[in-house]
Image (cartoon, rainbow, N blue to C red):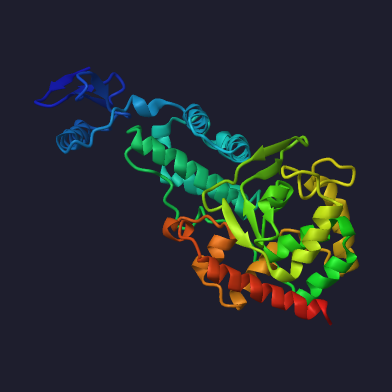
Length: 367
């Protein structure tokens, strides 16, 4: 075994005939190259590059990157303030789709090729949307590892891999909405009307209280949601984003129906729920599903989801001149274009949109 001394670092020949390179890092400690080399020349080239890296101020402590992905990713989720459903999604993606491949790997050892192979393998087993969500989570975790100086570069570099390929939501004419209303039990007709013509999400409808349904002003204020977790537990929460906390104008044409519903089916008092189950308990998606299945089968739309009513309302709003900014404000949409999320459509224009939606419904209702 021989050892070569240099101005920066050292090289030694191992009993195996391979060469090891070591150097003193900015932290004052000795560090070895992550692998051995076939020749002393290869080891010397590596030391030259490492010295240049230190001089440029780009050196990362290789010991930090030795944490396993599962350990780091679990702490990553623990450190974030997340909605319960979001946290549950992240832990599920981590457990079922990321940990089996990357869990025992050290952060510093994950390469672009590893990510490409993992994605291809996953696409062969689960849906593209699940793979896209898993990839986006992996990319976010490793982006933080870059910020924490555990790794120099994020190995998640597949263009478009984090964008779910969601199918176009089905839309139906307003006349078909009228058929759905006719087939819907009276208790739930206001639910269909608000779901269509204010485009509120299911959780926003289930969480709506009487004090936030201002029928004199003709607006609904979205400030609370209800999420049904695995196991049936209901979680009362605030909307997921700033954009979700909004006030939406109601078409005048459906206000009489909403008044009748409030007087007949809603809980008493300003804090009472607007929509409750048939026995007076909280409105559950799982309980309503049986009713909805019968309704959509009766009107000949077996694949039409309740959430698709929201798409119908948004399509109507767009066809009646709503701009992108106005539509995003009305539907509480979140996107990476924060400037559009946080700009509010004017009350006058929102009222005009609501009137156009009401006119479309009135035309069908009165025929």
